Amino acid sequence: MASGNYASLAAVEITFRSIQPLFYSTPIRLGGLGLSTAKIGNVLAVSSVLNGLFQAIVFARMNERFGSKKTFMFGVASTIPCIVMFPLLNFIAQHKGHGNFLWAGLGLQILFSLGIGLGYGAIFIFIAKASPNRECIGATNGISQTSVSIMRAIGPAVASSLFSLSIEKGILGGHLVYYVLTTFVGIALYIASFLPHRLWDDME
Image (cartoon, rainbow, N blue to C red; front, side, top):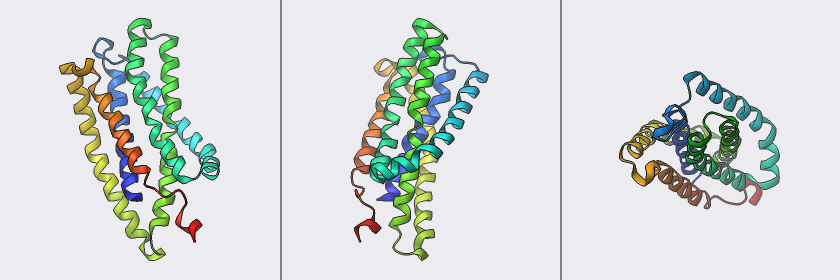
């Protein structure tokens, strides 16, 4: 169960991360933001730095207060507003251009995305507890990493293809990819609901 949830979190995150630079670079008239390579690099760099700081400051406190299951589900659910921001940002770009409103929206998307990383810290705790004994920890981690590697291998290709298909065919106004990704998140949350509310050591 823990490995499956780790894989589902990796899947929803990698699809979001794959579409992010594509969306930023796609021309506004095609549904993106039309940002330059330099600006995209700056946005992603700022996002990475803030993410590291956020995890270091927030995770331990949140996990202690709300528990690993709620923290994990919060991390998964954080991708929903990130995805919703894509069409909203394009709407802002179409009507306001690359002005303050757009950069405020990008900042908001980055803020939402910080929550995703919390899910990893929480699910690692479940994976560690899932091992029946210390000798099996390596095997348990190996199984988990294998499933995640598969998701990270196919996720970008699937997400990129869906993004291109949505734009080229104009399916659902070019927003098909966002509906599909939101559905993925819903499935991931459903899978997460089967995680125990309390860790195994706590139940002994």
